[in-house]
Amino acid sequence: MKKLFLFLICVCSISVVQAQKTAITETGEEVILYSDGTWKLKNGETKAAVIAVNPKKFVKPVTSTFLLKSTKLNIGVWIDSKTWTFKKAASNEDAEYEFQLKDGDLYGMMITEKVEIPLETLKEIALENGRAVSPDITIVKEEYRTVNNVKVLMLQMNGTIQGVKFTYFGYYYSNANGTVQFLTYTSQNLFATYKVKSEDLLNGFVEIK
Image (cartoon, rainbow, N blue to C red; front, side, top):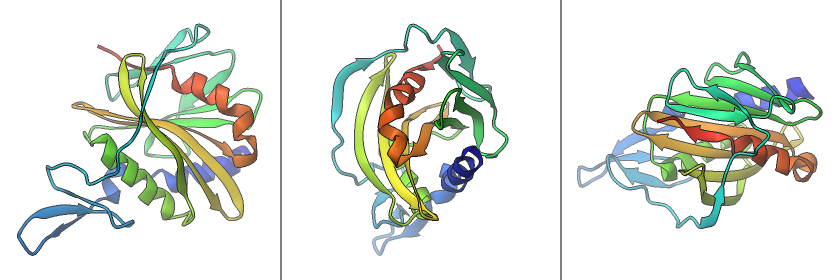
């Protein structure tokens, strides 16, 4: 199961920069295009639907006492080392860290890039990347959250690859220093079982001042 899901996440999580295509409109404006038909003006606002804001304040679990810091950006994640293992990413060259639940089929990874990208644009990029290998991938839940005083975009996406139904559940974040995709993933039939564990890991996300 581990090797299968590592393969799935690798083929779905390509660099965010690679997903962008540019074009010139008949009025001379430069725009960025996406495969689902959405677009944004270059250096302008993304054309996107309104995303709800969750009023709850999310904080790291008290059991998450180990701070894993990014070597690329000013961010980190507090981890419960009794529950999760982590290592430098080896199966995906775009990722910085990989995570695995010690007693189950739940996995995670953190992709960090030194490119600032609007959160609304990250949503479209995540969909485009996923559709490249899973045409039926859909967003089943989306909202903005405040996690340890940091605004993130939460996306839950379902899709199918080679008959395997999977769920991505993660946070997307960007500032002037770069962009983070912090994801957990498992099979759809196990997601309800692991949702609390997923959120415990994701809610360890922090910006380091």
